[in-house]
Amino acid sequence: MNTQELFETFRDAAAHPKKQLDAYLAAGEKVVLTAPVYVPEEIIHAMGLVPMGAWGADLPLARSKEYFPAFICSIMQSILELGIRGEYDGASAIVIPSLCDSLKCLGENWKYAVPTIPFIPMTYPQNRWGEVGTAFTKAGYERVIADLEKATGAKFDEEKLTASIRVYNRHNDAMRRLAAALPRHPEVTARQRSDLFKSAFFMKKETHTALVEELLGQWGEGSQAGEKVPVMTTGILCDSPALLDIFDELGLRIVADDVAAESRQYRTDTPDGLAPLDALSEKFARMGLCSVLYHPKKERLEYIAKTAKEKGAKGVIVVLTKFCDPEEFDYPLLKKACSATGLPVALVEVDRQMEDFEQARTLLEAFKVMLV
Ligand code: SF4
Image 1 (tube, rainbow, N blue to C red):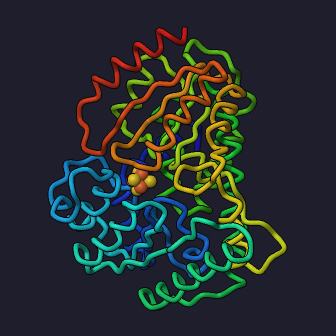
Image 2: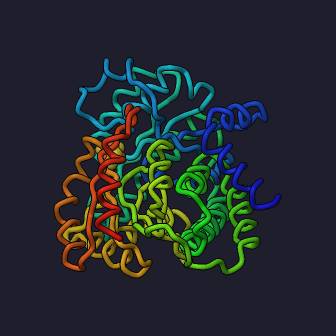
């Protein structure tokens, strides 16, 4: 494939998850949905099942409101809405981690709203370090394995998990190299950049890794040059085509991100030298720099300011999912950390139900004027 065809493939996968799901099912594969964030996909992969991201979609919410109050995040509401509408029909189970209060509600509501797709909880500890933390995480993984065996009939095998960990570590490496190469390619639009990350949730990791490596092989060095204004994004999700088009129309170029659905996924590898389930638990202990992962010193905030500076961003754009408590709590501290290094910050509130982004356009337009 040439570069254009590669981008078309990423776009197709990112824009049509249902098509991917139907193709897996037609090929006789069993699919397990993975809700945000940090589901141990390696376990699902090792059991011969296809993990597939369930991050919701931009759509009007109707039925999910029967289960949720209006003031809860729309990512979760839209996952439930899609489940009720039958968009995930055919999936064998959904794994939902417990990393924020809203996600805890999603699992409980899912049981009643979508009884045809079994809900499997992944209960993570907040204090994830040391013997106690990793033992708790491991017990959570063992529970997921038992539930997956019951829901799908598939069997868990430690050796296969070792092989799957290698597949995922390789994908992490490819995605980190991709993120590092993107600032040298000003020709990549904000939407194309989003497609590169979003498609990873719906494609098999081996396939996605091969495509990303092919793209990197074709790219060569690239150059920093370009007319656009470099910025860094942060938030849980930044995939709305309407918003991304505004970035492109205004000439704002994303040179780095701290987005949960993008780079945050790929920062930590599973370490070598431990039994596979212990290694996976250790990986979770080593993760950090994320609003949903407890860290008393909040190093994440300085990390964002430092990364923005290193990558040459002139400002940080916080893409805040409405009613996302973990991100809202971090925002004042993030603003302080960025101000301390002279980095301007803009806050754009987004919602999966939003159709009109003109308010965001005005804000980003004014922000760009500040940066140039
Ligand atoms: S967007 Fe925020 S509130 Fe919603 S599921 Fe993610 S962390 Fe939780």
